[in-house]
Image 1 (cartoon, rainbow, N blue to C red):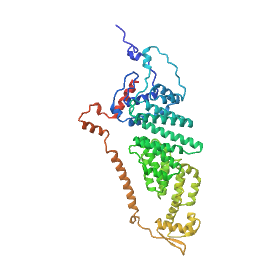
Image 2 (cartoon, rainbow, N blue to C red; image 1 turned 90 degrees about the horizontal axis):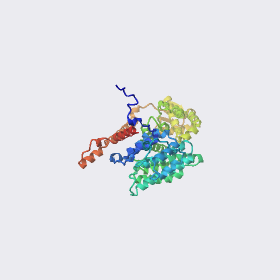
Image 3 (cartoon, rainbow, N blue to C red; image 1 turned 90 degrees about the vertical axis):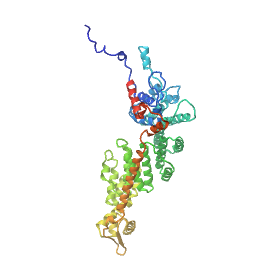
Image 4 (spheres, one colour; image 1 turned 120 degrees about the vertical axis):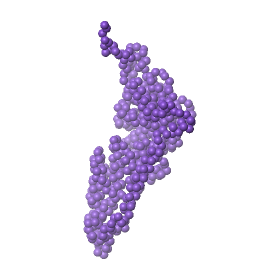
Length: 526
């Protein structure tokens, strides 16, 4: 009787082979994109499989792939990027220029690996990308730009970003020249938009170090935005519009920024991040133009749409401006807003200014503003906060009107830290005319006499507050209806019905399900 097989003898012949080295994360992410775009990412020499469903929306596919590859991008180094460009990009293909640029960023270890047999060598051999070569080229260049920026190599980062933008633009132009060979270029749109954003960021930093602005990029951004509109590139349209608005606001050209907003159209299908930036820029423009109600609406919407688990710096910037706009509208923000997680230190100066406005003490207000003047200028809110002096005076007059039925103008000047009783008389007269207080000025006696309290429900203030709430609810309802108007992939069913054909069971799956299946197959294969 023979002995039972041992544990090692039970293994299959495939398992006894020498295990292959793990695939680097950048390579795995690149080959996943190859599969998602309809190519064959296996290491054999098989040809590409036609999958029209996955290739029908390359822009959407690349955009989602960029979101899922953020972890891979955060751990990459320049050596990893250079090595990946040599393994993935064909030196004789359309990405030869990007391969040459990336391979020079860092030294690459090209020492040959010892192989025991020809079959193992064939298994270790890596094939170049075919379908996603241009997308991966642009992605690798963007990773290199970001790494150079983080290493404070701003000049090298700017040069690489400029070259990467030219490479991607040349790919798009060549695909639109009716030359067969490389297919649709819409998958490059999200990558080109990212490259424009990185380029503007690096150029801004280089200009800040040299003491200038990013004016030289403005003409280039206008031209790029015009071309993006012509080719219906939603990603570049939204990104470049926000970059131009930020450039104009940084240069304090508010009227020019307002003209740009009024003469341009923000794409409805743009990403949520770009929409949040556009709402923030629009709200800032409207606040500087004294349109506080519209500014409050846009800033509130931007803060509501902003992701809550990331983008802390952006949420702090929006919250700062929103607090100032509320104060300019005559409202006092809730105290809990200043104690949110991660915002307490950043919003501390605004809490002190809000307390001074609430007290109505002009002297304390000027002290608080003088304390944090440099910080407020750095935040870009000093101009708006300087307008709050009138709001402080109005808040103080309201408290005096409620506390005293009769008070002299000299006491009003002392309480509000005004220059003289004459100045207090002018301030009180304007407040009475604007409806801030209900009182009468006795010029001969030199005092202010308050009228009896009027029932607030007899005024138009409740109706105005009710109107604001209704407008907010209607806006939210319209957005929800617009978002649910068309079910996902409904156009495909209508297209099949119009053709009179029936879809197979495999075609009933959505793009996300098929993409997930391909990713699972890719993970099992490697």
